[in-house]
Image (tube, rainbow, N blue to C red; front, side, top):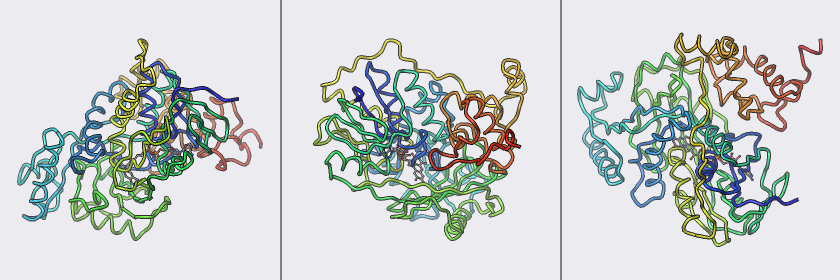
Length: 474
Ligand SMILES: Cc1cc2nc3c(=O)[nH]c(=O)nc-3n(C[C@H](O)[C@H](O)[C@H](O)COP(=O)(O)OP(=O)(O)OC[C@H]3O[C@@H](n4cnc5c(N)ncnc54)[C@H](O)[C@@H]3O)c2cc1C
């Protein structure tokens, strides 16, 4: 049986989920489709987590305008969506007079684009901001509006709030065919007035299903390396070198969780998530020219993500030759930053088209329920939380201080796989990488979901974790 919708969004990454949340302000029937078992399992899962200030790209590019606006909007969204987001500021560094001229260029470009409070810092002011910087660094462009965010939690909050406001989310629903007003998934067929193609690395394939052959998506892989919390004393801001043509360079990033990330690489044509020693060595060497006190001993884990780079190197956002089919494609960096502004741009396109009634709901819920975390609570708050829910008193992940209450809340908010729990709570992301807590998490998930442990998976189909239930099968 066909399902009737106003809008079907393909892809529950940061772009699709932000669009779903923004559109949920209006009286519309909306479906958000995702091929994976959960949201945030695509490009939005593996990136640097920076909300860029927005001085990197040239005025006139779609991504420049949306980056600056997106950065601003995260300030408003932080409270509404209880987002893990902090404006730590970023520094683009220079070594000597020639580099400093380039900083002047980016300062001018940033000012043109409306990036707030940009300035060039030198000498003592620079050392005060970053005491561990290499002596070779002579100046930096300082952008206090830049921040760091937890990218997957942000996706989950957008989806959660969209669902609070009536959006229907369909995980495990791979789109296999598209025609004007029709979207067919592996599960069912949707009839809809609008289709929004936010399929990340698959956006060109989805457009082709609709008969559009206007752009390609080329993968560009980025390896990232996470350093122990001990490294957090070494860096206060996101630090960039001067950019190259294809990337913003190797960065040093103080994450929200107290670790430090170094990377990413920029490997054109690579579409896999492997990490390699040679790239680590190159990233480490480059990082040590910025902060010499960073050592290989600090490394705790590694991952890789793949940027969807579209023909023309810009975002492709807009209506197409197929009626009702809107592309949100080529969302490479700074897509995480720009996502809230991308969502506004999609609403503007729908308003301009004028064939869909966009009545604002009077009962729109702007706020998600709070997400208290044992890790960040003071003693008094923790005692209060334990009194309300004793599960806060039971630590499941000792490395990351994640309580049983947080695991249970994650399941109740939609996590159905071990990776879904990990991304929502950080359980299993610490030093021991889940060695101690995985079994307990599975027990809690089985209880909450009312399924045998043997049915639980790491990340959906073909990733079962247990051949038999060790506890009930002795
Ligand atoms: C290494 C790296 C570092 C980065 N760092 C930053 C940064 O610091 N700051 C920043 O702003 N940006 C950064 N980015 C860019 C940012 O991560 C991306 O722009 C953003 O995540 C893209 O989001 P998306 O929603 O377009 O894609 P995705 O997150 O991939 O979402 C698309 C979704 O569509 C689903 N899908 C695909 N095909 C189908 C189908 N047939 N049917 C149903 N669903 C489908 C996918 O499973 C996926 O979940 C970085 C990227 C990389 C790779």
